[in-house]
Length: 116
Image 1 (cartoon, helix red, strand yellow):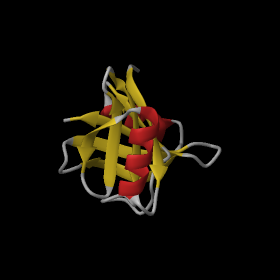
Image 2: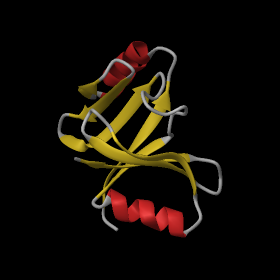
Image 3: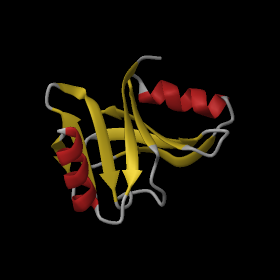
Image 4: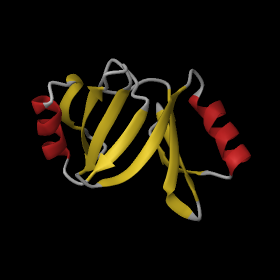
């Protein structure tokens, strides 16, 4: 499996205030803003990112980390073969990602995604 990037996801009751704080403190700039989630990136290296969200648009939980992989379908099959708990099914989202949530044995929720 090839990992393309790993992005921490922070849940926040005030996405705008959180985004402003991280932008100002760390020099990050918004690269995606859907209102309920804002992703910030280092202007000198777009691979350095973090996201803040108030909720998830299509799932009942907010993941703790987003991991972009080269082949999300193969990773989904592997998670199923491992008997991992799928917390949100493999879904094609209207914002251009194919993703699923899986729960690690420690209870952490991972958003595994690929761009469509």
